[in-house]
Amino acid sequence: MESTKNADIRTNNRKRVVNTLFRQGAMTKRDLADRLDLSLATLTLLLKELKAKRLIANGMALDSTGGRKPLLIEPAYDVKYSVGMEVSQHELRIVAIDLGSHVLAKEIYPYGMDTSREYWLKVSGILEEFIAEHIKNPKKLLDVGLAMQAPLSRAQDKTLTDARGHMPEPDMIQSCFRYPLIIRNSAKQAALAQIWGASHQDNFVYVSASSVLSGAMVYEQRVIDLEMPNSRFGRLLLSKEECSMPRFEDLCTVNALCQKTGSSSIGQFFQKLQDGSQSCKDAWEQALEAFSILFYNLYQIFGWKIVAGGSLSPYLLAYQDDIEKRLAKLSEGREEYDSYVTVSDLGVHSAAIGAAMLSIDRFLETGYNNL
Image (cartoon, rainbow, N blue to C red; front, side):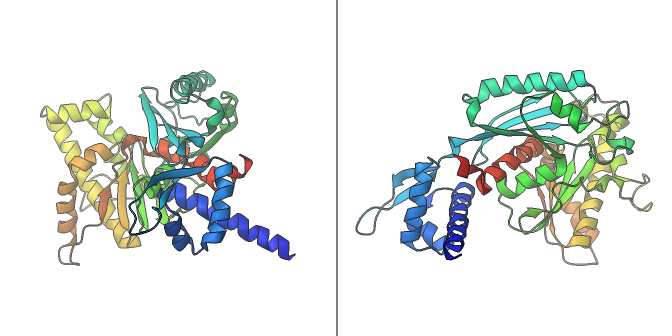
């Protein structure tokens, strides 16, 4: 019984070492021991095991205040790679990341979601080409993560389906790929990427402004109900005093902006806006006001910071000062305004990055034991 208990402690300590190094980066043995509250003797044995698996290596020597120069313990990020895809209503996005979730390659393809087998076979072919180009050793590839804006458990909801009102079947999708797929909802994968990629330590609400308006809640570095459908912020109602349209999704999504202005893509919408189109100016003004109301309401409900991401995030980033002014105005007479909205800098690939992270997380929990 005692030997079993000691083995469990050793396994748990090894996992803590792996996760700390790969998530926080290289550090000295002393720093790692202090951070994990382990003795140097115990840590030395654990590091020896991880070196044997080629998961870590000695890095550069640091300056010494006396005696032997301390060496950095370097995680071997290139031991495994992961690929993530996001299928939206307008685009296919693919990324490749290493064990440190560093983005190695990313691509965008103009193929919006379809439910046909022909479509998914085409996506599979694109994935194969992407992997062949960017993952030189296929044996190092973990599973492929797939993020979809459509919630797989709500087939009766026609607003998040393809143009024909149909939902893709997960089993049919998987049959088109030779790699195992982990299929999840996009906003929650984007929130997962935000935790690691942007190092947000606080609890926050993630708002994904893409073809639809959805989101996720992050509590203590965990996405709440990661495997469940996205939160449907777009279905929340605006008050008639603040806006004539009843729902947020009617104003501040890619679909709404394009449909209201006859734009074929969000890129074309913003080009027309830059060229002075009055209809685009009006639509974007309504969208900014709706975003501000949504952010304000979510902050009042949760008391958490708001992180805005998704397809519109690169454009929202340019208007962050405008949004801050609107939020300050909404707070007048209620409370002193203190900025609580951040626009994600991960861009349109955030959900694909999060989808790729699923395999990385699983590998860093237990998968490395099989090396």
